[in-house]
Image (cartoon, rainbow, N blue to C red; front, side):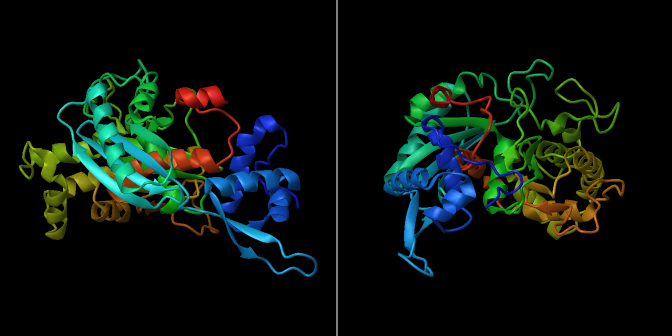
Length: 408
């Protein structure tokens, strides 16, 4: 059987065993198959697949589903991916909140916890993470493959100011993975929240079945996750996707990064909160933001209209830019804004006609709302672990934990 376009084949050398495991698990994630069929589809020898299946079955990552009828000879044993065979932890760290989610390796949430933060020093947060992980272990004794930890970007840059509502002082991405691994006694994957959120939407959300898509993530600011041919685009230093600091209005509103007219000054959660406070619709304590938004939407309050208008205009320009840069199958919106507001924004978009995404053969909308809601980034953190387990990769993640660097 010839390899499909963009498919990554396995290798028989023992040193590529980890790669071969990902190839096989990735294949079984989409279809049940016998060993000979897996060998043909993945470019591996039947003996290599037999050895891997024995190992993966022993670990509970695959399971037998019976035998398939054959024209002659012994009916082959059929194997399938076992989503309940292990679990993964996901942590999302924001300036005001720590969220934990425990998922099975199929991406289904089994447990969630939220911890409001008064202080964000790494040592304090690591202790909270350890306590939440202990709760997860007590409630779900299945083997934990690892933990994902996601934080707002950018990572270790001088070109953007380290000030503002979305930053986490003291969170050095070169040191945090080792600190988290020591606190959790687990392998840890660190990434930007938007990149992880994109993986979550591809695993079981609005981008499921897509191989190339863009995910605009509404956290405190606005981030972007790009998945191209099934792989997240991270850039040279893990900072691809800082779309919130793309200048959309030259000479416009000042931004904490030092620029003027940045996109997230016009379309983000904190820009909406700033507008509501200025209109007298929200107090200084912003914990009631979501209930206020839903109430204003339900009553068609005109106080929300100016923000929706400016946000839809800015977002339309940004989406047109993303389409022509990355040629995605779809652009997904999601994160920490109510679904009802995202639906209104999508309805108000005026997408540019001069876009590579304006196609007669389109089967998906150019823009869609994500389905994971406020848990998107935390689910994405767990998805980092699952992605590393089942998806072959040709290059190393620039922000791997210590245990992963040693195993490359």
